Image 1 (cartoon, helix red, strand yellow):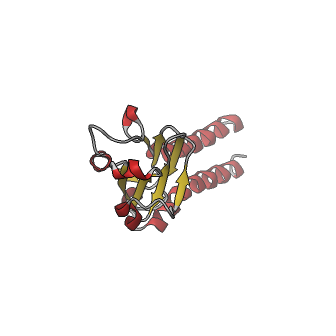
Image 2 (image 1 turned 60 degrees about the vertical axis):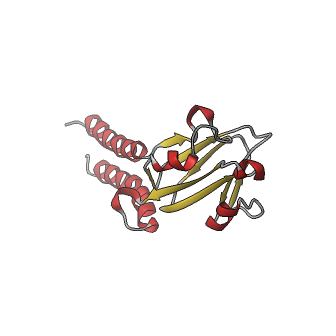
Image 3 (image 1 turned 90 degrees about the vertical axis):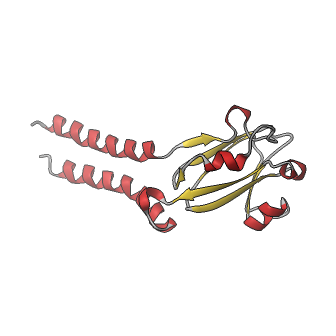
Length: 160
């Protein structure tokens, strides 16, 4: 087998490993076509419970940035619709939030009145591929790319 064929095989393997990492994560638009708004015919929590989220997945919040926002908050602030001290505040109208840790994640509208009208949601995120904690989940996600780089380097060094 000549040098170029081996190189194509190495690059192909690396591409497959990268694709596996990308294909395992999903991005879900919150609220479907309605986006992030005061719900009238559904509950965000019921919607979130019907979906399975894992570390590496992300949520896309689409909303009118002139009238609304997305706050990531603690459980206590979620329960009280407290907008005074969010963990993170987003107001760009097209917010993507990626999950790096398993467990419960709490989101409310930055507009207090909207939150009172149930524009809020709890998302439960499972550890990635059966990992028991967030640290090992994050290590697993980043190691896939590292494995691909190691395999590619090893094979390139041994092609000659």
